[in-house]
Image (cartoon, rainbow over all chains, first blue to last red; front, side, top):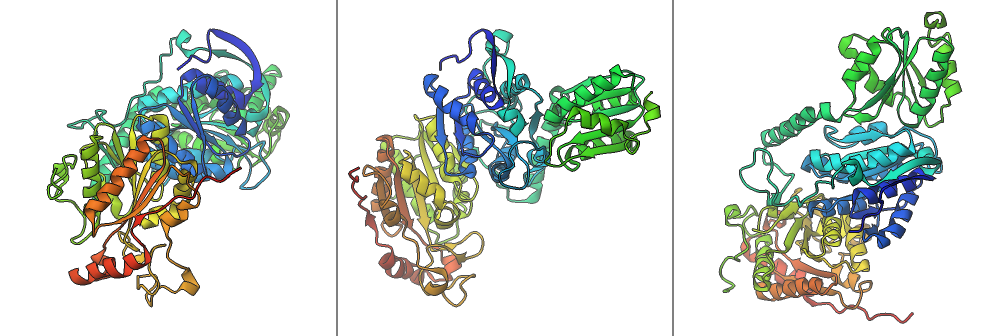
Length: 369
Length: 247
């Protein structure tokens, strides 16, 4: 398989193109896709470049087939992925639930769109809960929420590696805005940055932890509840042990903070700018952005809250999907002084976050002086 | 190898198998096992099975076997074969999985002529879930969801899979209907279906089979249902594919 990205160079492209280049650079072998806006250009570019770099593509009959065909490819030991959005994500939950329980390293890029609806495909963060917990199971998944094209590139590569290393379905969660906007980033050969090839090998014949013999028969069927319970317990244990190595976040602020602004993904960009401006204006505001939504960086969030007087404002283009994760994480040390700026399915600017922070209904502005 | 003995590629640790007494699955899987033995394909074979009774075959063979979800066995086999063309992919399913919930996958794989071998067991009912109507339930046949007999005016006519696919597959594809009443012939069909995959084409075998548990039939009635009623509606044999259209 020919190396698609050699050395490193700056590029100016859309987020969807950045994802396709990242999958090529990571050495993904096959993409199974079904058209849905706003992720289409990932498969467009993959299809064109794929023939040049000996990678496969199939446009399947629906998202169910895309998900299950990705599973088939992965079982045979090949690095494979798909991309989807909105109603497509809903259909993807069936194959992903199976992948979750059978520990299959399927990678899916989700470019969120507003809704549930048709046509609104630009600005939304309403697929957080679906992506993290959409299956009929425990949400044993890795979910990276990106805030720039560089992150789309970096975390798409990382998604393949961690999916195969930890054997949990892994997601890159973007949105229509990131998908379609053009931005500068650096493309690089992961090998030159010390990132080896994705550790992919056939699932059959592999040796599982605690198993007596190599795996030949792959099932997700159990005769009694206790048998299922034991398997789940093992998966939950594996997940819990992986959490410290997986969680990622971005924080800036000072120990004198009086309020922590929390946002993820593209809204995180607006939050970062808002907090930077507020700091310059002498306001004691800190900033926290979870990069992994699942597992959630709970410990880091609690530490950030301690530096911020226990007050938090969550901004998101959804009605509390991130807010609930923040509340849950924070509640281990007592309920925080919680405020929210929810705009489900609507974009959020830095100015709006500043206004929300300074709004007397949101927080006593005097405290921030 | 004698057709009276157990196929070499059967996993003896999982025998006796889990199917009900009188069920035809064991015979279909015997035909498959013998075909794989004769072609010497066990090193390359991957077997994927659907949900429902076919799931009980998840550890049936000594080659890799995996279960999937209801109706989704074909896309798993398609993905596996596309990503790893050296493997031989067998998708094994029932009539509910193949002709109802997964029909678009069967149809689409046939349209694309994906080089996989699909084997579908037609016993006219959803058996694992307790005997509901399947697309293949015969007119007048009683099931839990057609307790007064299947009515054409309400639920249509039984689905003829190979005949339907014949209209859309490429001429090189293989389509056949066998029966557990004639295992040697069924084995020959499955063997051809595996060979056709090796030649790069889609191959599909429907196997008429028995379900005395849900049919609530005696041994004699089971056999006559299979040989008389089913075989009359579903004619066993190879099904000719339509020729390539001029374009």
